[in-house]
Length: 525
Image 1 (cartoon, rainbow, N blue to C red):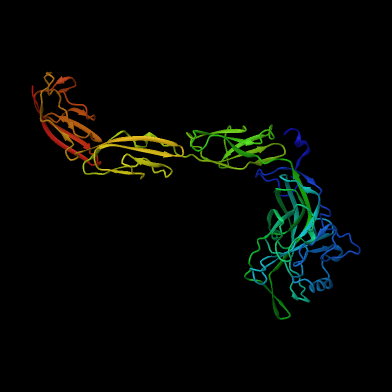
Image 2 (cartoon, one colour):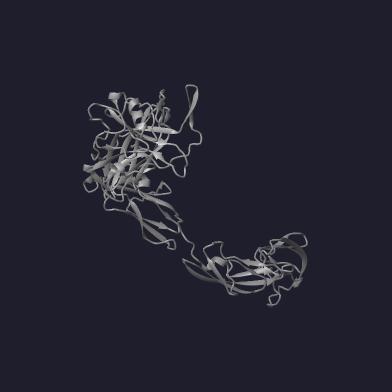
């Protein structure tokens, strides 16, 4: 248990969709900072309209917010709509409220209108519900807002109002909702512009969620967020991502066509939750992309003491890695994206990510072996590495990654990048390839130290080589695959008689061309 704190915290597991195996649960507790969270109308007499819900405001006066109550069958009277149409440029007939509602007897209606007029002047037409919080949301704390969204169907009624014929609306799915906040409550009722989204008037976007549902149903929505400052008032409604509606809905009214690009939604049963759990963050304890090892540490490790930690690479759990730190080795080429999962009775949280990459380290072996033999007339290209992070400087001043060599000599290069510098060199020898070998015609294995072996002389060592010698009857009396070996005139320790023998040599030259040559030799005793 995390320092006894989990006894006072509980996870919001009773909410549908919160208990997935996605390991994103955090222990939250409900906080009652909303007055009248279900939009109940305590006014007398009961009525539905565009104002007078206790503790709630309709900050947009260009597109109106509605409050609908069971006592009026969740319908704003036509006389009220007509009356408001004299002063409001955008008024509407809200959809049919899905029943039953989530809580109480009242709901709020917010609108998201399509483009009306010049999109450069009037790009956003929306409405919100706003209220002052009884206690502010605290800076850097973790919060969750849970609320319900109703997707209503289109009614059958049209209404002739002062500003034209009003067509019945419906709720288009999906719709994105945003939660906005202000540091205090001064001017909350008038802080939004006549036209536009809340952010255009300085409201802070705290978080968003996209909600989908069938017509005539309610959907639960969740916004998880933190705040960069204390928040004293909130506004909730359609996000600022208004989409251009190229093809408005076309309805028929009394044999005439009516176009509409207006959509509205219902809100009910808002509830805030708070958590004191910090986010686990991965930091680099030691090492960098040039090191042989990198050590990562999960913070704040002390807060999660007693919890099960599990490191993951590329979303795959790493066996045996359950401590606050992990050592990652270049030798094992363990590059990837690392996270750390925290699990206990009340929480399962995945940390932020950190990517481990390795930069190549300059090495003196990048030119290969120290010596190379090449056929005369050919060109040898020295190319230490194809890595683009390296800088090169050859002994002739060239800074190109490759150097073309056409003559014998010693060639050196300095290779460098942010990880260091290495110097390496290579001796290149050009030689004849057409006449790579000389084969003697006779030898005298008499032990005098002169011409005692039949041995092939090589101007350039071949890549592959075999030597076979046969007597007059065709029996193989000698074989070797080592160019440094020769025949001493014996077979199985028995000296062979003087006379003529046949030799066969097979080899591959530096151009990887295979050759087979034959000849005769004379053994003299």
